Amino acid sequence: MRGLLDLATGCYPSFLFGGPVSALLPVFHLHESDPAVLESRLAYAADNGYRTVTTDAIARFVLEGVHPGPRTVALCFDDCWATLWTLAGPLLRRYGMSAIGFAIPGRVTDAAGVRPTIEEQPESAVAADWSDVPFATWPELRSLQASGLMDIQSHTCSHSAIFAGPQIVDFVTPEFVRRPLLNRPRASAGLDRPWLTPEDLGAPLHVQRSRMSDALRFLDDEAPRARCIRHVAESGGSGFFERPRWRAELTAIASGGRGRFETATDREHEILEELHKGRSMLEARLGTCVRHVCLPWGIAGHETHRALARTGHQLAFADRLFGRRAVAAGDNPHALMRLHERFLSCLPGRGRRWFGTAKS
Image (tube, rainbow, N blue to C red):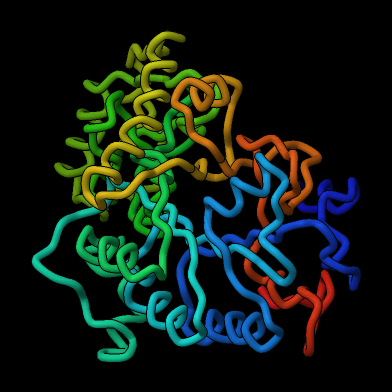
């Protein structure tokens, strides 16, 4: 629905439909890396004479009006999954390009060294995002930053989803393992609290929102949650969900809970902490200056915009209704929008595709 609305209101730049890029700066977002797909997109950009720029060049364009030059684009790897190191780094080096990595420091782990890349162990490199260490480690991020291949910036401290209401919409079932890692909610307040995992079978799930939205966090009652988890464990674990009335059993156990909403002050404090710690942890571990942030899921509420002004972040990438999905001089620096990576092939050049034919 959002895509159709953007299309109907002219949010997509004209170069997706065969027009020129003109005075815009196309910025593309990428996530997990498929080696064949990523290489084909980098090859298209390189073969057609495009060069890449990073966040400070974007900031200079937005804030001062200094365009980085013709045939320039920015590539953003959100989340900094392990394939940022094992796949993206080697391919960027191969094509003489650089990119921006938006890291989640609260999810980054340390390691004694770096992992083999696709040049050394292709099979393990491709599967790295599904390993026990799914994000690029601190040594890997430091190496990418030091090499000039990657400009590491903030994706907030924890990239958290929160509960936003008392209504129970589901429970953690064996299918929860299929839920994307970053879409699993943090049920309790505080950036040091754990997220729900597939091991928490039976835990009630409420409606979710991004921590960076204006939603007040709903803190569910931990006692009924613990009883639900215990009941499932004592009733066969995953086999419990083969019972025809398993949902009714858990609903009865969870229905007596007394949750509460956080205060507006609590919300303000935690949003500020997400921004402050996201920057300070990266600066401390990488020894760099972090000036920019990408908001998870592109969501930034009014409270987050106020917090960005207080924390002094120069740029923030976030969606805005009817906003243009490309960067222009004078744009709101805290609401910059990007394009999906599949639209790289819509850039003017040999072998160009148009909107609707670009491969996903």
